[in-house]
Image 1 (spheres, rainbow, N blue to C red):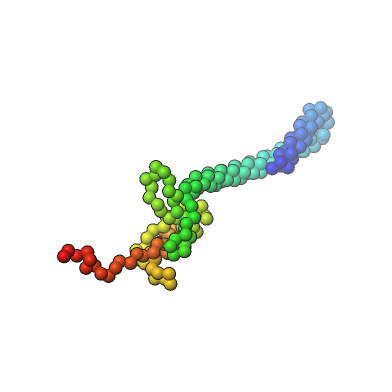
Image 2 (image 1 turned 120 degrees about the vertical axis):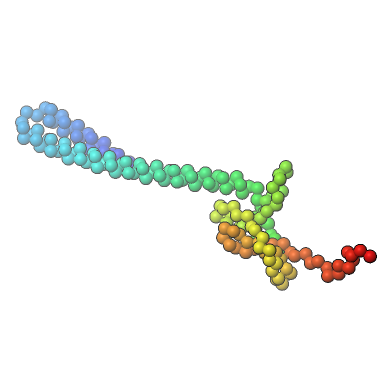
Length: 167
């Protein structure tokens, strides 16, 4: 953009010099020659002006895009400071809401895959419990990227319920 601006200034100076020549000349052929050169310089200036306008517009669009991205990054940084890495009973890694004083928000978990892309996606229960070599675990999924994550161990209920029946 600097070179285009310098070229425009140079062309404007040359056009001004041609105007001086036209003003001071007495010979019609010198005037005609200077007028032709002046028309060429004016055309060059108009072309350079159009180029500078498009460069300015492109730079303005890039600036707007970068400003928007910067705002999104700052918003994510504000939201993400309340989360910490947590390893579930099954050994999966998720992000968990830190216990905050004076907070009514219940603990919830975020998808690590989405978190790395600066997206907050709360894991949702599937209602399924999955058997593994470590035991049975509740399965959650990410609604954003459809990742399934094993979470908490299923607490087994004793088969003997007669202890709870009235005698």
